[in-house]
Image (cartoon, rainbow over all chains, first blue to last red; front, side, top):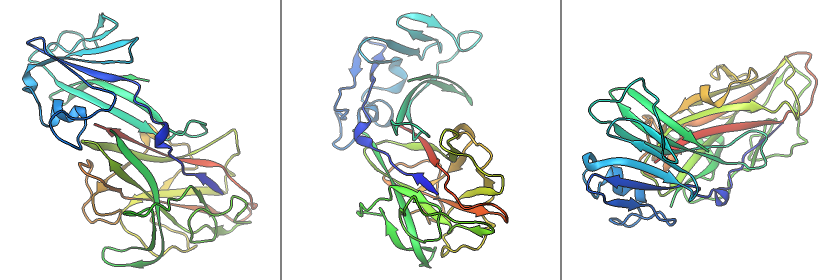
Length: 136
Length: 184
């Protein structure tokens, strides 16, 4: 009665890198080595959310890109963009700004020759409501 | 920089308080990770895929698997667990059930029917509806695991047992344990 237990994390490649855009036009670009600019042993997202190198309230847009496609969440009104084309996952613009959600969901899948899958999850939260765009 | 994840397994007699397995594979600095889980009559890591139990009535040993998270991350959350059957490789005889649960309590594995494993994975449970799993920096047996992990640590035990009812033939079954998690 076999149950395969393999995760080969060497095969886990970071497909998308993020770009954080601030109100004054400043951009923070995640680099492929994904290292914090502030603290050894931390990753780039640490600089955005966990020890913000610039105030979180100044973060207005957050993008991820693989160099071809660009996915965006706008934290001022909650709209999303794919390659510059805007759309909403709400009936109207969100008032009062929203909180960024960005994570990578890892899964070990059944019956797959590729044992590991990463889904990039980009969106926002506000008062118990969340809208997340999942990108393979 | 990213989180790393490795499968681990506890075997042997329960020891300590809270109880854990005497033999720990993959725990701490150990890298003897299990590569497959065979629901057989042995309380051991891995096992030959030719091993089978049955005909029923009989149960496999309860297997105590868990994940170890390491590497670099800010937060691990939303961990879920299921066991998926692969229809292309076999099927579950209605008299064969895979029972499981997410628990922090280790007991010496035996072939006695484990009534504490209440989820029947023989009925397809997709990972979106999988069992929620908590974590701890100390071990799968920790008394107060949390839904978010902010430093290297472990999931609770993902305990499973194959339960074969009377009349079921001996044989093999290919399934895959599925765990997902969100990383920031």
